[in-house]
Length: 171
Image 1 (cartoon, one colour):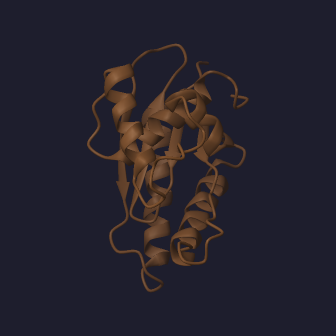
Image 2 (image 1 turned 180 degrees about the horizontal axis):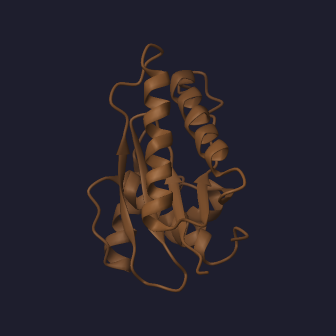
């Protein structure tokens, strides 16, 4: 049985995903979008997300799921509780679905960025409030891997997949 990895860059609006296998150089990637995340619709969105995870499992014969670790910004001005709560709930859906079916593990942001982007810390000359990491992930996908994505979430999911497939994440 070959290994097939689904990598997820979970976010409240757009979750980047990528599917690949160490035995193949063919990748698939895309975005899973929530419709309208709020407390009133969270149960419906979580059910829909679980159905999507099940669909991905069946369609792509997923054997492993690599999820980016949830990052909690300690800066009270930048912290978004709703976004973090949604990420935790979506991650819990993946873990619950995967239990006994699929090996699931978290990937450190610093580790996948170091391998895929060549950096794990933002350069000191880059402004704090920029989309530096997002733009860099899209650029690396295009320049180093000849993969052109529409959304930075896809590029980050491809970076997580790249890290997961090299075995450093215990695939």
